[in-house]
Image 1 (cartoon, rainbow, N blue to C red):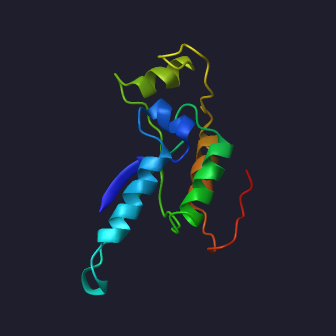
Image 2 (cartoon, one colour):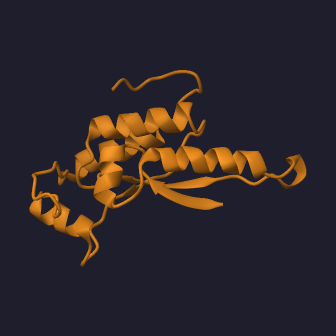
Length: 134
């Protein structure tokens, strides 16, 4: 089953207009509880975004730690944020402001740095090891 938490940092999720990471935790617990037997077991695939307005390297390291230690997965892909016309996220990207609070937010515009954010979350890591410190 494909789901789109997109991120795990509550501050970034709020900017995305999404519920906090506890919603993902609760959903995963319920999914694991009702999941089928070994023969028909289902799996979750996560859609993740790097370099969303408001997201920095530390947020991506925290996302990687969460996926590794809480979800127990090594994401194989993540999308780099692309502004879509008419969305709050596009407004944030182009203005550098949270449109609701009017406060400045960090927006990564350097493509190399965007790729670095993506590389953090898709880096291969052994479970139980933490190679990214916050």
